Length: 107
Image (cartoon, rainbow, N blue to C red; front, side):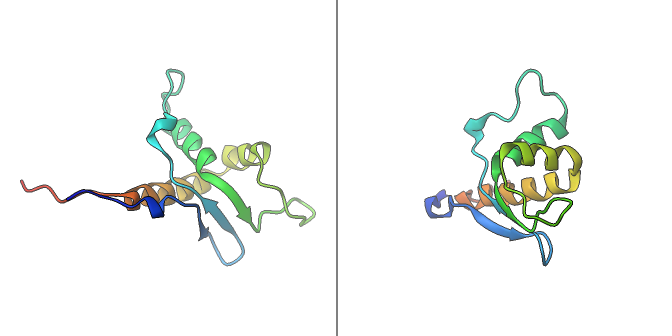
């Protein structure tokens, strides 16, 4: 039996540490992460992370003022933090797995 869990298709908060959290949504395959100009795996993961990152808590500027999670700031963060890219993509992938439960194939 193949189970589709449409209720799981929601944004969720994930704690990065005790002060930082990210609101992440699943990455639909229809978004086509790969374009002809993107052959680098990190470019593809950055695109997935940028789409999947909806909001954040605990991200501040040099004066400790909260920074809005907009396209410009997401681009800046993801351009300079490979670790955050992997964190977001890992959680988005797990969320995708929660949406469709495939049966185990017998070999």
